Length: 490
Image 1 (cartoon, rainbow, N blue to C red):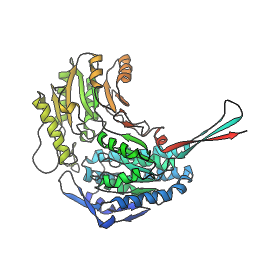
Image 2 (image 1 turned 45 degrees about the vertical axis):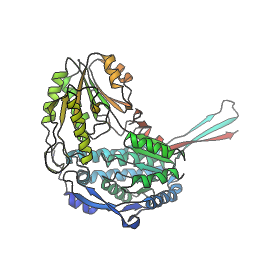
Image 3 (image 1 turned 30 degrees about the vertical axis):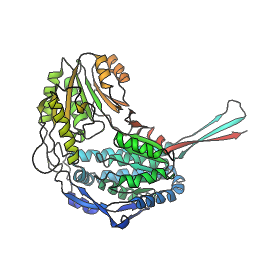
Image 4 (image 1 turned 120 degrees about the horizontal axis):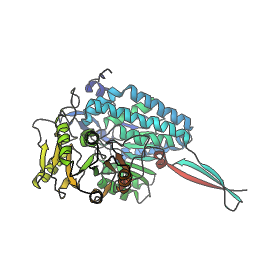
């Protein structure tokens, strides 16, 4: 298989509009304000993009409202074909999109290219769901009336995406909205707006009508978002981000009773039983921990390993983690790119320091390299005190904290002792235990003998304070549809 030839980031950057995308046109923010987009590998600015204010948000919402009725009446097959064309365009430009993501977010090029393929799959999946929106017809129990059920788009949506998967989180929300017949205002994370702007261009090229998707880049999220949610015209919010911000947005949705779906924080347990295949478990750990440098809500956060195999598991994992090459994501052979910014790296540094101060042993990593950029080495800690802050905080970095356990009831209680419940990972070869543990873990998803759960065909989401609703799968489009019941006397 040939190695992809990635274009230079500067060449790709030159092709991406740096303005707001509203009503099918590119425009400056009010007052011509701009904000920098930084390269986390160097700390230097890549470019400036439009920095929207509240008036720009209202302009985007007005465009979405104006387009809603006509878009809702568009044939499902037409919506499907737009998504299919966009899917094909993303695949055609996967290398360029990868170079763009690596520049603004830092992940290695090979991983960024994988994200481009993953992102495209959401458009393919929902292109197929667009033509399968159904309803129902039934005779009422009294026999005198008929019930007609239809599905209708919920209306203009506000989509808020995070920085860690800047392309895929956009397609995961935009895909079902387009398929359902909803118009949108998309607010990407300020750290990674370029992928969303490129995606807007692709969708326009694929034939998406003006006003259906409007992209507002801003460094002043609170000023822009709150008026949209409280004004009574946005009918649906889809948000991916921290639980803390999610709580704030829920409060802002309350006055207008805005429908919400949220994928929030995680504190994923990674449980390895004594009968686990350690080759499979270590491989799963590398995926669950090191995907996206650990900057993922699905990242394994707490490693619980049976005491009888803990030393061997930790040694194997440390050797694998220590062999990874750290550097700029654009450099060939690099496995681990920089963290998103200095604040993110300082958080990881503080969590590791706290764990070490409480008695943890560093098997590999654990110290910040000198030089530019926001790099942090893959780190394995053993003997972690359960009171360490990283046990109750989403690490969002390449740190594996290992604790031991002796029996099933003990590990279930410890794994569930968190406000979050997004995903859990479970490694065992005993079928009864696998089913029992999958039911007992208080999470929305379980990786059974695998470190990867994300798939466009699967319903993605969590329980407790990890969110509301699901994205992807057959139910993903339901978040953007309402039921309408028509009573028909006969």
